[in-house]
Amino acid sequence: MLLGAAATIIALPAGLLGSRLLCRYMAVFLNFDIKSFAVPLWVYALVALVGIITPLVAAMYPVWRGIRVPVRVAISDYNLSPNSFGSAVVDRLLARLGGNYRPFLISLRNSFRRRARLALTLLTLSAGGVFFMSALNVRASMVNTLDQMFATRKFDLSVIFASPQPIDKVERAIRDTSGVNAFEGWFVTEGSLTNAGDPHTTTPAGGLHGGDSRGENRFTIIALPSDSQLQKPQISEGRSLATNDTDAIVINTTLAQRNPQLKVGNTVTIRMGPAEVNWKVVGIARESFSPAIAYIPLSFIQQRHPGETNSLRLALAKSDSDSIDAVKAELETNLEKEGLRARASTSKAESRFGFDQHMVMIYIFLIVMSAIIAGVGGLGLMTTMSVNVLERRREIGVLRAIGATSRTIAMIIVGEGLVIGLLSWTIAALAAWPISKAVGDSLVGLLFRGGMDFVFEFRGLLIWLAVSFLLSSAATLLPAWRASRLTIRESLAYE
Image (tube, rainbow, N blue to C red; front, top):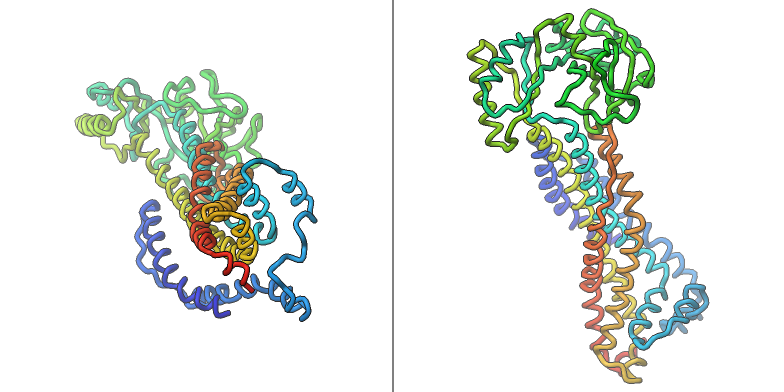
């Protein structure tokens, strides 16, 4: 209880400071300001309760074992384990190992002498490695998913109008703008399934006939040329739009997951403005981090809004930020000459930057967690090695008596720590793949309601292997230094 209370007193101010720094840092990526860092009193009470109860729970089993030891056994204890080495299968396997480098063999065998203590140490160290490799794997997987998603977009700049505009004026403005290789006039509106929500929900502004955006069943509808060269969706099921399609619709995976009736081959009724239109689902486009979107032939809109468009997609000669800004300024000027004004314009790079910022937030969170757990694991390993040295002082004295040097004693202790570090790395490497995928899908699902294309970052294995060796070496240096300074008289006289 005293240790738990002392740790809680230290942890509270450190936790408050660290959480405030992390929250302020994360707020930048989410684009909002934190007005207050006030914490309810029940949070402090919960922290204190957990901080005191956790050590009690951890000490329960050792205390229970200790009070069951008879007096005769307690006073005759010479710091030797009641179970001799070789009683377990692992011990017998290790005993068969031979070789010329005996200090390493002693280190290897010593690592498994206290298996329960070893398991607890490995658990913490492996958890740090799993979080670290998960952070790298999630980041690589998200980048890969975004690369595939943005690869379907063959345009560099999007221009949105508040209302439908004459396409002939838009074309004149674009022709007078330098640096534009190709463009397409699209039409963006909204719709809803008539049997999955309120059929009388009106279309929001920017749709076919205006209105508000109430209704959870709404999704974006993009009318584009069936042979569009600026949008090449990655079809996961079915097919893309064809030039002769009149009632075909392609939906993305987000929309398909939202409603079970949206399957390839099904005919669905969609309310667009005041009208209800029947569409046949011909394909599903894979778009992991996208909102719910459906694609329809532009010819359908042209029958109702002939010669008009409310959205442009432009492929530019140069896609660097300076060139895009120059095209934006020149296009805005040319549109104003035609009496038109764009509501917004966004480059593909800007859209990608917004996604990347959310990914960085997840990546940093996992890295911070891995650093904290690895630090705790390193302290646990240092404690384990210190206790091991304390328990084996007589053995160290015997080794010194038969000729072991201080360097040999230190190498045995450091070698034991390195063996534990290598074991923790092995466990983390085996668990990293499934845990990384589960963590990534969970976090991405919460933020974007989608999955990701998982990629295993093999570089993380090498990085964490180096970290494991460095951490193990650093954690065993002090116990090894203390063990190497013990004299034969001090070791054998230890009670």
